[in-house]
Length: 188
Image (cartoon, rainbow, N blue to C red; front, side, top):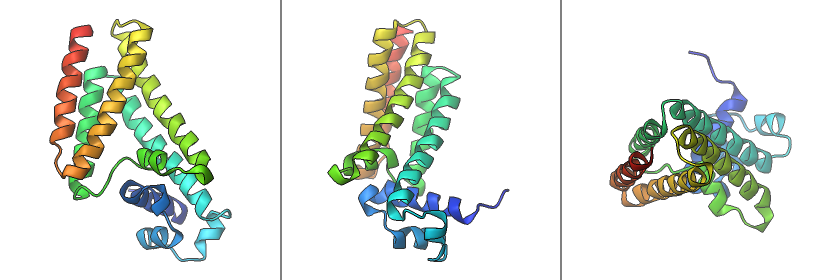
């Protein structure tokens, strides 16, 4: 197993905080506590401070989730939903329902001063929807309908993650997945 460097540990720590408290909850102190990194490493690795940490953590999280989606969509839309649900179920349960989607956390918590976070979150959501759209088109659905279905799928699953987190149960996630898969099976 490859040892993570200080910079990567700090990014992972920032992602963990963002999953639990949103972008506004990411502080230098919280990142240092999560990563076990010395204070001096903050400005060495992130000369622009907290703003740079948050922006790069959002991209780190987006890239990670995008990898899960890309891998899952190679096996079809149903497999992608199953993979998404397994991944989130594991994350929710192992975090005792503290974790949510860091990209959603950035989107929701992005105020006027953090407009670039909202824009970055939108780019990741669009990338994920495009991946879902491609697989649905490959299963025989028109591009226009696939685009709407990809939007529905992502919106429903992201909402189900929030419901699961707030109710401390994966039931909303599982129910949402069941209905999305039933819909997709009628179309593909």
